[in-house]
Length: 80
Image (cartoon, rainbow, N blue to C red; front, side, top):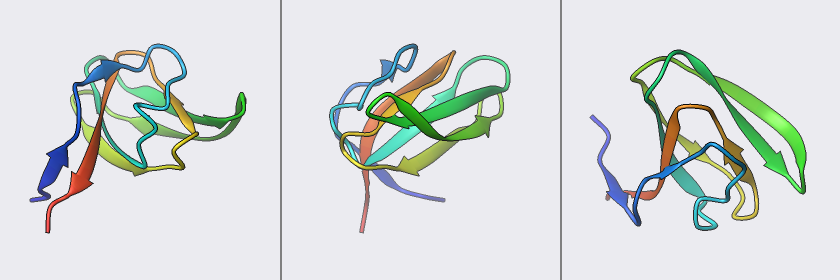
């Protein structure tokens, strides 16, 4: 089991967002299987499929944005 420490409130990732300029973000898909898109300066550089009711913790640069239909994100840190 992974322990995480949330640093804010979950937000919908329906449009490109830096998720409070976070470097670690917990993302959960609340709908059907979907694609989480990573971008920087408006240019997509990666995407990941997230299955229904699954979550991932992603690492990104503070200025990178995330977007995904039916997905929620919250800034987190790993707990030591």
